[in-house]
Image: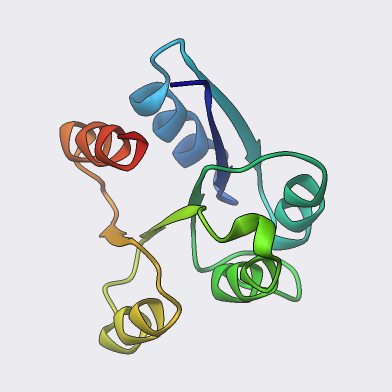
Length: 123
């Protein structure tokens, strides 16, 4: 298996740093951005195998909007998406399911759970 390309879209720098520390095993290519617009720009120019996505982001677009824009492109058909949000909103969970998002996690995320989830998505 080749390198897994992971994009973290999270506006909180501390959260981005914590997530990176949890998932960085030295064999993954990990990029971080803080807005949906930056995530869209990054993804248009780089491969993304796994997208770790906060829902509440600064700017005009939220996490769902970013995934809706990306999933229209066949290049992202195999991209796995994990929502990592501070809000356990039932409607957001329904929206995530309707958008074929792979997993929905609520902060604070259990490190072992996130590590295992990433490993399963890589398999």
